[in-house]
Image 1 (cartoon, rainbow, N blue to C red):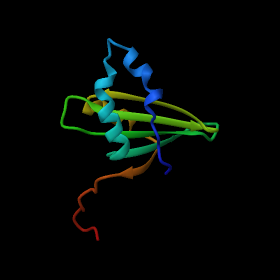
Image 2 (cartoon, one colour):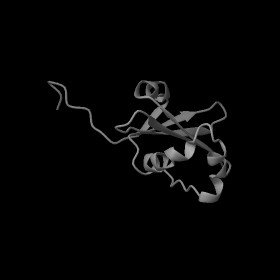
Image 3 (cartoon, rainbow, N blue to C red):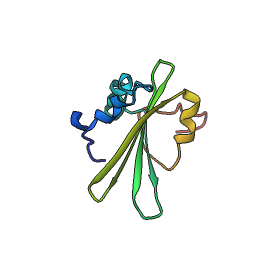
Length: 108
């Protein structure tokens, strides 16, 4: 995994969308990148891929941060959804999860 750097000067488009008031979710997006619940790698046909960071919180909305890096160019977005909506973003290769499933009876 490579570090992801988000610079303030590249965030102006977020606050320009006033009806969405997306700036209220920037702390959740930053926290999701630092402490994700899961990270998924979704491959494209051209061998490039995107990473989806999932953050879960004790609030109405959950956080998704999507990053696509291709030849040094970065395309990223973040969005919120309800907990049920997270499942449709759980596909591809699971690269990281911050939790462990409980052992089933009979497993070592």
